[in-house]
Image (cartoon, rainbow, N blue to C red; front, side, top):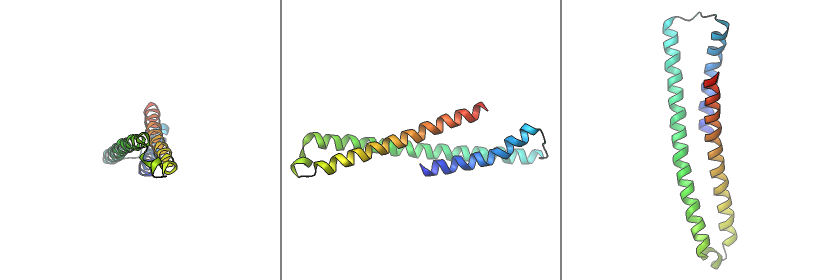
Length: 118
């Protein structure tokens, strides 16, 4: 999640001067610079998508873990061993992690759409 934020920050930092320059119409760049900028934006966008794909894979793993933990809780084996409280805490933590990953992905999608609209 931090990696996605870091890459998104790099992209925003990179685009701010470009957008400011375009807004003031003071273009002092040569055509080669524009091509380089496009390549840089494409590379950063690709890295964002790779980070998001990795997060989605992690999310899938967390959801599977949560499913197995809940099955274990239903079976009652942890309670029989006196570890029911530990199991419940773990379920809460995994559920919270899932919520965080979903929130990061959702916020990034919203931010990306907002940036495209500008």
